[in-house]
Image (tube, rainbow, N blue to C red; front, side):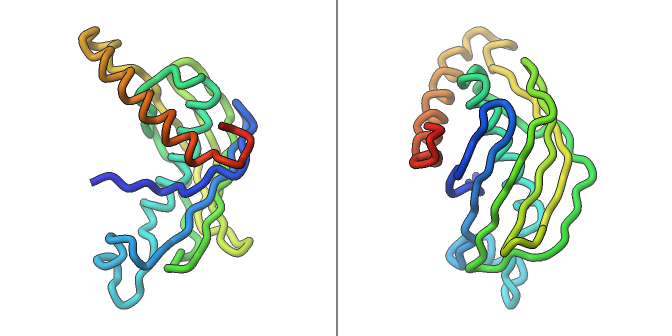
Length: 160
């Protein structure tokens, strides 16, 4: 199962910074299992919101050159509070470096102006065809679908 943990890209400065939001809704299926009497967004999903934001920054900066942009390493992850249904999380991610196959970031997630997650992390980016040229078709398909999703997420932000 795949979760999408970014609802909207608010602002993007190519190669430098991205701001995005996530609205936590009680209808999200994982909340039924994650403390049913006290539903909160799981901490790993808070981190994933930072990672997804950074992935969009990489894709925008590299003009969707890679089909795969994945978490490489997470460091100094600090969870400071909870995000319950009804909360809006604002993620701000700043790029330290975006290189051809790897990038590094620092990011913060806030709710009502208070930090709820902070992390430093790196991403790896590559194409499937680098290992097997027959997978170039899949790379093209994935990139096309990501471009479609990006248009939806970045609509109104001036980024798309």
